[in-house]
Image (cartoon, rainbow, N blue to C red; front, side):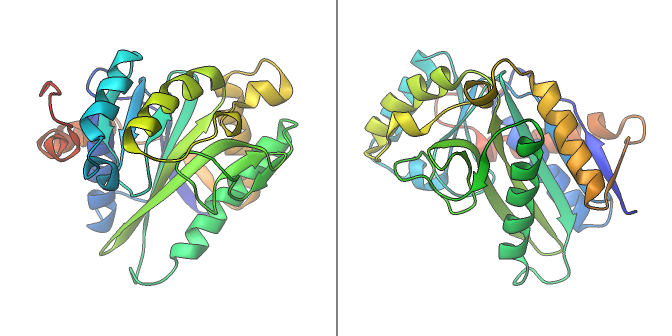
Length: 257
């Protein structure tokens, strides 16, 4: 059974440092300095914007709307459109070595989306893979409930030697997602139907992010992975490696930390 290193620590207090840690991990895996690794953690309250969002005429207004709603702002490691992370969500960032950066993109998307959908079905969610018309950050590999409500969004970044697949699962607080995305998407001039954004708790009742985490790890094991603990100091070293990269993910007006 192949091992996969599991990291569970968040990076609180500086929105841009979180994607920088994922980038540092991606670079370390690509260089053979870290094994295949999954970050699975509770994030800060942050709206993660894409490069396309940053190029929009309404970007500054969108960032202001996010901050007015109590969210930080950062740029994403992968493409897509604005997505919401908060304390009631579960973020994931999976970095794996790849031999050919031109191959396997679709397969990795398929594998992660099916993994997450299967884990949510373990909890009783009618989870399906596919885009819901009107959803935020639309994508064919979103995971939804009943074909009606988006619960998970995913993106991918590939560099020479490694690939990163990351995203967010909304466990609690669907109303918070809707409340911040409405003004953000309006500012960006993007379509968004608030009825398509929800949370797992809306489908099955009260549930903690830790229960979703446990279901994901159980599903990983059924697919041949054995999560392992990192060596002492591994995450702290990644954070230090990430600090010089954080400027890439900082939006205008954000403190340097």
